[in-house]
Every structure is written in structure tokens, then in C-alpha cells.
Length: 432
Image (cartoon, rainbow, N blue to C red; front, side):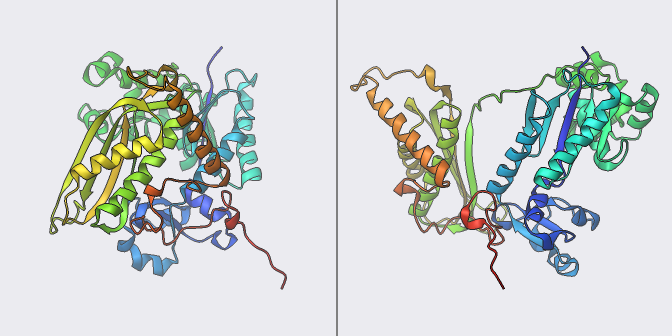
């Protein structure tokens, strides 16, 4: 049976989520900003048409924002994650085999769907219409015999290079038509070909998708890697990449943020580090793992060389792997007190949980006086903590070490309501 994959990608996802719940924004240019409302990380179609680039600092485009009426939003990650989960739930009706590739992209395996070749594009249109009808979001669909080609077909659907109605199906194109199409697409559009690889390929006179597809696979492997060799094979229609239906456990879990204002006091840094540890520990328990090491780092603003600079990070192995937020917080604060230096204005802090192992393979301490019962009580307590926060909202229940006022928290001056994640975010209708 020949393989058939579809890549479903939400259009301008973050900006589209912001527009979805405010009809006044329908035709307005919208951008979403990074942490502390720094740079543009998402643009609506209207903003792209204005030529405003991705990553530009928000303060640099204030004149354009006023001139064109651009509306800026702080990143509302809870909203985007919830809408992403809803999209995945809709897509799961179209294939039993699905891989969530990113927050706005999913691969579907259509190989066993008993669809005729001429029906694939129609199936893609049905997917697109269902997401639009049920969730109000626009998606594009790329269909092809390999994941790499499906990703490229999705690009063609978005740019209008091939296909129609937001769907591009490579399985219906003849070899000649595909070659003609690939000759018009630069090689940097291929999945996995970044700027550095693109430059090295250009030195070999490989500048288009067709040239990469037709390159000698053994030469590509010798000069680059087996990964790029597989990409060449995938461009030729040979499926080398299977769906990852089960997301592999992370080997490291990191949590870090830039502060809304410079932080000078150690007490404020301790609150921030404790808060970051709590987030990382929640993710750790979600994948049923334990951490065998903790890293903490702090740094001043490297983009302001005129002010005194300092940065330091230390990793400490734990005597016993754990997922207990209380224990991890104790170790993180010990590390922070070791590396903190007074007199500096700190711009960012971060934590990382290392040496992760499955909870089922926990190595007991040699002199555990409680015979493991202490860890059982810890697990029950952490389960209660997670359940309460999942039901009533993140940080409903937290350690006192995480602070209350949090003067260090990042700026989110243009944050939209939690339309789907908080009762307070629901629109209120009142009689006139």
C-alpha cells in the first residue's frame, strides 16, 4: 500500500486566534508580540501585506502601527494552546493516525483511508471546511506520498503555487508537472534545510527543490548527513519518515523568562526561580518522569553593554531523582544563593531539569529510612497540586516561595482575555 500523508497547517495561527473572538478585528492588521511585548512573533495577512518583517522590535514600528491601525497583542499562550488542542480534536476525526508536529501543524496518515487518488483533494477541502465551520480558523492542507513532500505541498497551497481552495495534492500531478513546480521553488523551502545548509548547497550549485531532488544521494550523505540524504529520498517520493504518534519524553525540561523590569534583589530572583521550577516540575510529572539534576542561571541584559554585566549558571546533581516541586525548589534556591552577586540589574533567569528518568525506574536511596513511603506521600501530594491547578487554573495552588506580588513578572500590557480558558474571559452581554 502506498503511503499518503497530509499536513494541516493553521494560517497565521496566533494572530488568527486573537481575531477569532473580536469581530472588530476581522479586517484589521494584527500582530502578536514576544515576551515582555518585545518583538513581532506573529502577523496577520494584512500585516504581511504591509511588508512588516517577522522579529522586528515593536518600538521600531510605532509609526507604521499608528499609520495603518495595527493592533498589537501580548502572547496569550494559554489561548493558543487550547485552540491548538481543539484543532487536533477535529483532525482526529479524519484519520486514526495523527502526529502533532507543532502548535499549529499536524500530520495525518491517509494511507488506510480507502480514498481514491482523485478523492484526496476533496478530502482535504472537507478537512479545511470542518475546521473553519467548527472553530472559525483557516487552514491549508498539503497532500503527498511523503512527509517532506506534504510539507512542501502545504507551502504551495499557502502561496498559491499549486492546487486550489487552500489544498495542494501532489499525488495528482504528473512527474513533469512536479519537476516544473520544483524548479520554481528555492531549496530553503524544503523541510529541514536551514540557512546554513542552504548556503552550503548553493556552493554546490543546488538552489532549487528540483536540483536537490536530483542530486546524488550518496554525495549529499557524505557532505552533509544521513538526515539530508533521507530528505532527498523523500523528495523523490520514497517515504523514509513515519508518523510519531506518541510524542517522545523530553530529555531536558527548561523554563526561563526575561523580567518585565530589571531585578536587583535576591528575594525577587528567588521568587522567579521558584516559579520557573514549579512550571518545569509540572511538565516533568506530566510525562511521568523524575529529574536527577537541576541547573539555574541568571544574567544581566547582554544587549546593554554600557551597564555592568554578569552571568552565571550552575548544575547540581541530586542525591535522589525526584518530581517533587518542594524538593526541586529547595535545590534551585540553594544554587541561586550560590551564584547571586549583589549590585547587578538582572534581566533574565532560567532553570533546567536534567538527567530525566521514567518514574517507574526510580532508583531508591540506599539509606531511605521510610522505605519509599515518603516518595509515595510526595507523589500523592503532587497529584493533588496538579489536579487543583488543572481544574481551577494554573497557579491556583502554589508554593509560598513563588511569591504573591511578583514585581519581576514579564510585561503583558496588551494581553487578550482567556476566552476559552477562564470564566473571567467570557464575553458579557447586557441588555440595552
